[in-house]
Image (cartoon, rainbow, N blue to C red; front, side):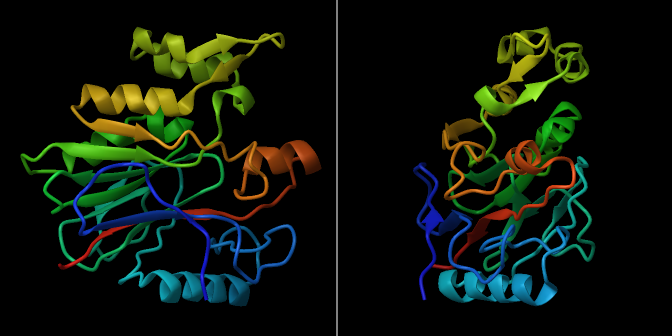
Length: 248
């Protein structure tokens, strides 16, 4: 069995293993077709469990930690007993840190010496509330950090109101350049650009996938695309972005 996966376009130590799943290769039926990995989107539990098993068997995913994400700013250690968080980190071999997304930013982190990794789920709320700062603060080493921003909704399709824009520029006026006014008296928001700006401020070397979850319906889930197509009751699946340290 093989599953199509997205590999991060970054140069990291060989023992750092990372990927993002696509919507292909699973057993979920429409509208979750087919590799939905989330239990909270009304898909059949048996389908999600089979999809997760396929992912684990195909990739050799070690000790996966599936989070219960709530758009918080909480970042926890993999070995912590709770699963309620929007970020996970590890400095041990064989502990897979995972976040699930369908438009929000999946951000994978590691250090240059390959001894620390993290996975972060960052929607606009988490980003505005400084989840990236919280994540970087968990790292206590001296080797520089590297980040990869995976498939997420692009500026072209991410329309927001003034309240979202204000939540960013009120804390950092320089973030205004990531909002472009449109003809609907709203704003097109470059969420990935904001994340890169913030991470760069913290000394992180950032790599962008430049993959849009909204526009690539063949490969990625998009909550906003589903909402535009089917209304507020729309449901869709979730991709997983995964990172772990492998013993060499």
